[in-house]
Amino acid sequence: MLRLDDASLYASYDPSGMLQTALGLSRQVRDAWEIGRAARLPALPRSPAHVVVAGMGGSAIGGDLLAASLGARLSVPLTVVRDSRLPRYVGPESVVIATSYSGETEETLAVTTEAQRAGATVLAITSGGRLAEMAARGGGGVVRIPAGFAPRAALGYLMVPALAALERWGLVDSCAEDVEEAARVVEEVASESGPAVPTIRNPAKRLARELTGRIPAVYAGSPELEAAARRWKCQFNENSKTLAAWNAFPELTHNETVGWGAPPEVRAVVSVIVLLGGDEPERALRRIRVTTELAFRHAAGTHEVRGRGRRALSRLLSLVQLGDLVSIYLACLRGIDPTPVEAIETVKRRMRDEA
Ligand code: PA5
View 1 (cartoon, protein in one colour):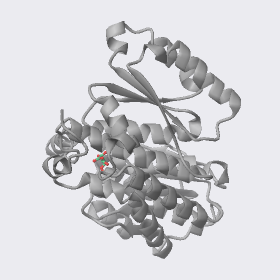
View 2 (cartoon, helix red, strand yellow):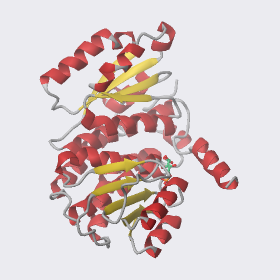
View 3 (cartoon, rainbow, N blue to C red):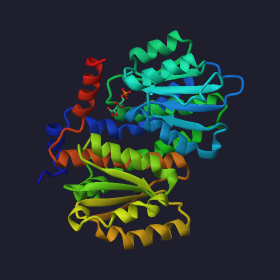
View 4 (cartoon, rainbow, N blue to C red):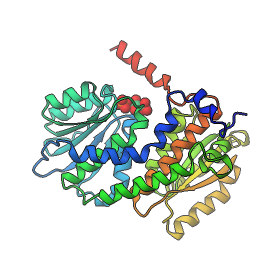
């Protein structure tokens, strides 16, 4: 079996440095905040009705994390659209934040065209591509973020400038302390789970070892943490190249628990990971305990991980940091390079060629 404490493993299986990039999330968050604070923003509509964050995959998850971390603090609703069509309610009072790392994603370009036609205020967050040109030509704003990352490894750059924009537009109160606390707890997680920390004391390496040969089912302990569970699932897909599932309490106790009646040979390959924020009310914890006892006892394993910090952004991003590291360690344990995502590229290429 490959050993995560052997430093040469990373040179062999992670030649593009996905692990080091992931460990830099706290730096990215701080840097992205400054980029967002300095960016030229388009003027808001006179009475903004809502914000739509449009994007796909690694460029969309920042929208979910944003919505979850701000929650009721936003003065208008924020929805995330992962589609090539916008809801019909988008119009001149809408703000559309189009996020595409490459700036070339078909669905995001289509939505941006629709937003411009509808007279919405458009802000593009991208490293370049046609999205940047299109937004600038249409009189919208463009936040240019550094190029050279895999989209999912640029999460801080894709998400945090949108947070800064919402604050500067006055759609949310000051977020500077949220950003600073989040960067600090993310840094703590990274230093406790870095490659130099031996497996015996390293939470990310230990969890990756437990997940080898399993299908992870990542369950958010509360709706607030759904976006983190989704991120874990997508990182298992893209970095570890494995199937994974996500869901959230309390909703999953109204459907998915029944699915744990699957044949024993199916249940035996699924490992449950419950994400907790650390501030769950007693009754919510009770529901998780009861479910673990009744349903997850059939799983290959059940693991609980806890987010850090007082604020929602910190809890979410600390969980994201840990999950990113687990997914990369799992890839290396399998002897797989976490960076390439050929299946994604192939579909994009085929769709372009057939257009
Ligand atoms: O992680 C990935 O590579 C994908 O999920 C991409 O983010 C997705 O295909 C959209 O591409 P982009 O982020 O360039 O808009």
